[in-house]
Image: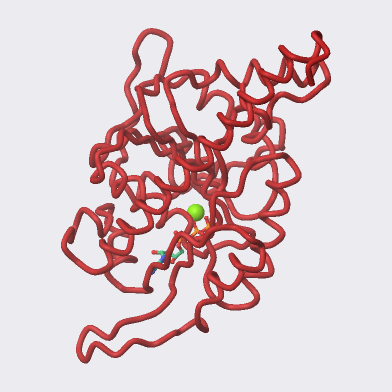
Length: 297
Ligand SMILES: Nc1ncnc2c1ncn2[C@@H]1O[C@H](COP(=O)(O)OP(=O)(O)OP(=O)(O)O)[C@@H](O)[C@H]1O
Ligand SMILES: [Mg+2]
């Protein structure tokens, strides 16, 4: 058990062991979050999931935005997923296992649910879905610090949270709030991704910083967490989302795809670092537990 889940009280120990069993076939679970809406979480999650498969990983993408699920559209899957026994089989898109409330609720229907219902829905996405042997499960969150974020951190042992931001001040202010929420519930912060970072003119190649410059990187420095890279603002990235073919699939040799691949590689490296730290911590805890009764500490 990782150190951050080995809380002292028996109820939280119970809770941690429940967490351990909910997703036994998934190595790393990563929340894609932001304090502010519309900064590109879903776009980044969709492209990153495919970029990670292109780097050789087995990947799942869970759309935890119960009220406004966008992942089916962005990944180009609309058919309801199949069943195997009493479990739901995730849909497949571009080599990624995909699950979303959007498969079960018609697109034009508003989901009006209270917090506990959101919690139950997210729990079912873990308990009742037949996720394969995955290296990474990316969880696309709704904006802010609401029910979905809390449920997620309570239900499963998150490897960590990634914050997506745009470079300008107002978005960064919200990032801080989002990050603080994860810190409070002991979820490691994996890093910041700066989306809509700059625009490169397709005609003359001039680079313009539409939403200010390098804010995400500065924020990462300020909060002392890694900066995982920047993604340009580009019409082809938006089109990819709208037509269900992420840019990393539609144009694999483009600079936009390279930007996603660079971020995917930085994320992989960061996850490896965090999990090595956790293993070292839990090992030293185990050694401490063995030594304590002998009075050797
Ligand atoms: N790098 C980018 N370049 C161009 N358009 C982008 C980029 N990233 C996101 N977009 C567009 O911005 C809009 C918002 O993106 P997206 O839905 O991914 O944000 P979000 O943070 O998931 O939003 P919400 O908070 O509502 O869940 C979409 O139309 C998307 O296509
Ligand atoms: Mg979204």
